[in-house]
Image (tube, rainbow, N blue to C red; front, side, top):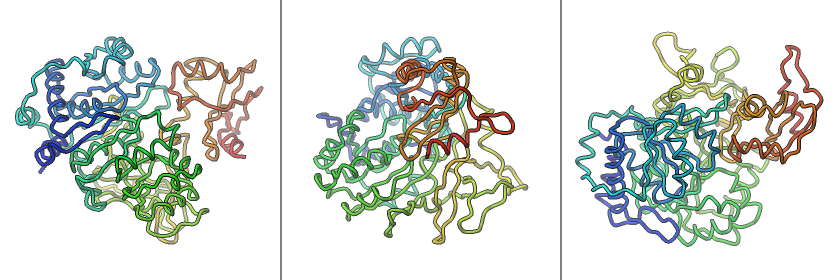
Amino acid sequence: MKINLIEYFVETVGHFGERTAVVDGNRHVTFNDLDVQARKLAQTIIDTCQCKNRPVAMFMPKCVEAAVADLAITYSGNAYMNLDVKNPAERLGNIFALIQPAAVITNSKFKAIIEPIASANGAKVINVEEVNADAPTQEALLARISDLIDTDPYCIINTSGSTGTPKGVVLNHKSFIDFMAQTFDEYHFSENDIIGSLSPVLFDIWSYEMCLLQGKGASIVVIPDTWSAFPVKILQLMQEQKVSYIFWVPTIMVNIANMGLLQQVPLPELRLCWFAGEVFPTKQFNIWRHNLPQTTFANFYGPIEITLDCVYYTVEREIADDEPIPIGKPFRNTDILILDGNNQNVTDANKEGELCIRGTSLAMGYYNNPEKTSAAFVQNPLNHSYPEIIYRTGDLVFINSRGEIVFKGRKDSLIKHLGYRIELGEIEHVIINTLKLVKNGCVVYNHQRKEITLYYEAEQELTAADFRKSIGNTLPKYMIPVVYHHLPELKRNTNGKIDRLYYSKLVEE
């Protein structure tokens, strides 16, 4: 019985050591080479920190060294936390102050950015380009972590938080192993699979791609982040590398469909396509499905607080352009509750309720944040007999006449934009309280145009350029509003609060 993901990797290296593990531009790294580099770095982490079961950050874009770092952190008995190199310094500082990682792994290019932040928070800095430790044996490293258990943290993934500081979601080995057991066989993964890796390293999609590498010996082909603006290059790389599997956010897929690129660049080797993170417009999805008849498509759903995903739908029927793609059914060993406003389970077809989850897939909570944890991970209101935690997603769903779960929308101000989960309240907090740019503001989302929009009160109108320059020093680019509306006074509801529902409807008109 395996209880730590690195045990899968050790077994895979033994079977497929000379096969290619990662393709990064002109670099082709074998499993043996990846393993040796990871063990050297693991020893450096151990020597530098003398730590176990602690968060260790990684501050590099997706590359061979990023894969090495995540494997090394696991080998060392710690939990990796991948950071966005595009994040402003203030946001990175907030993350370090909250999570207090023991160390951060980076390279020469990004060391100057992260070193002062790490030093201010007591974290050691390890440059992967300066590692000179001897590689301990696999057996020695496995012996060192033999006292760890499967509910110890595997990774921490940061997600937007309403107070301006991201929440660190703690995911353990057991929940990943459970998800691997459910998906590996059902979708027939093997060492012959080649992954077209597009998502940034801070996404849970990257974590699953690493699971495939560790558990099945699949190869990862790194698609540069900058190529999102050049989708034809992405398809050409996939064709050249014979990519067989992708797990993408729909935004780029919509662009590819709208540009007619699937007719120009055939992808005969693509056997499996998963998508998640936001709604995939059915019209553009059908373009993909009709151009790739040999490909199996699956819609995955799940917030970060549910390891990877909890509900899925393998598309096996025709779906009309005006029909939403269902999110399907729960995974094995995962149970869903659809609760109405009275915390009663919704059983009638087409009646909506909040999707709540129970099972092994649940995250352990938010790191160093017991208040947020207790608010989101709560006692099952249908169970009064013993402690049983569920996660309230805040997502509204209903069951259609076919018995399929369909996503309807959000209860609160949390959105999915470009694959990132964003708390609109965090943007408001930064604009109003941190930067004090305006007196009052209401940030809403135009789902049709995929635009974050700010309605604000201020004595004088500010230019969009002024907003973007100021906000860009605190928030990442994907969280900066693109549309701004200056108003003498924002509309209030009967209790004196800003009428968010009014502006949410207004922006969609």
